[in-house]
Length: 313
Image (cartoon, rainbow, N blue to C red; front, side, top):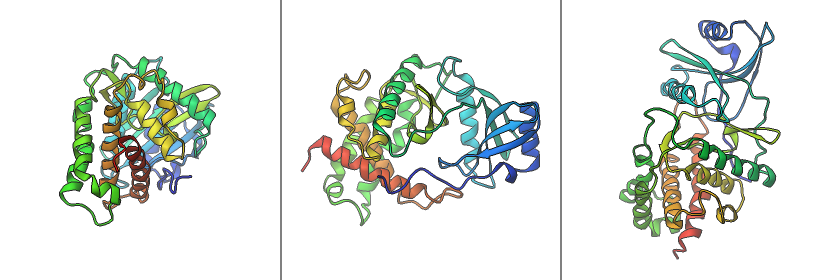
């Protein structure tokens, strides 16, 4: 079992400023009479299932600059992406958004589903592996106008090992230290293979998935960009490895990953390991006290997978 899960300190419906609650109720068309605050994820903002006086239900996310100065911009980016998604996408429909400059709230259709078990159960993991394949195919060609591009979005994370190699931390893994320059070159090479015409979620893990019987829903889209069709499948398998599953059997014959050069897959994983290793050593941002611990835990499991795939002694 992983040592840490994705969790943060979230606001509640009752703690939102009155003007924000009123703005959300205007979008809903009815006052909120009950709110069930949700846990999980790293945003310091609200995530709640709400019930209105007229019987309507919805899912509401809200965050403001007092909680974290960067988070409202993340919500705005998610609103832009989800508003452009086709109705057939397995994503809760965005009904509308509230934005007063400091606080941003998003109102979605409520999905009668639950997050997968953590750590992943094999049956649920297989269901979601198949669901991600269908998702990526359905979002090809990319349906969002002028999205951010993979090469631009991944440049910083794929080059993190170069920064670590320039000033190696004292607590680096010995194998990692021994191969820092090779890892830096390998990760940087991923930038040559990540482009494509698929809308990539990029943050697929158990707490960004909802299961409704055999149906799989995908939530939290602020980091989406246009890139290679196989990236989201790899992101999910990285999360499976984090939860103790052997990801390699899922690669054999995978509809999207099976035809990708194995070294390209390893290069992308190396970039992710470098990203987690570099960012996990930074101070925690406001309102997100556990994110660095989570990143370092992901670094350990992703690095172990990279080490296995490279075969470097």
